[in-house]
Length: 53
Image 1 (tube, rainbow, N blue to C red):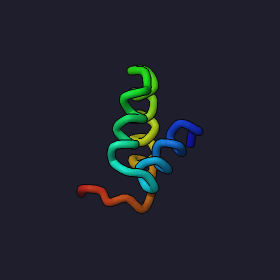
Image 2: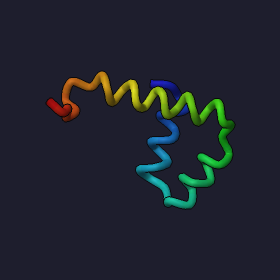
Image 3: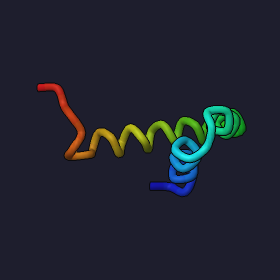
């Protein structure tokens, strides 16, 4: 997990929604795409996540 994603999760879980939104708005488009891609990759590869059969 990259440092950017760790920081984003930390802000989401510990700070206000306004802080989270402000942090996201301060990121570049490429950074946001990378964060979303990494988060989806982690979720898809998680053996404990639910799947549709």
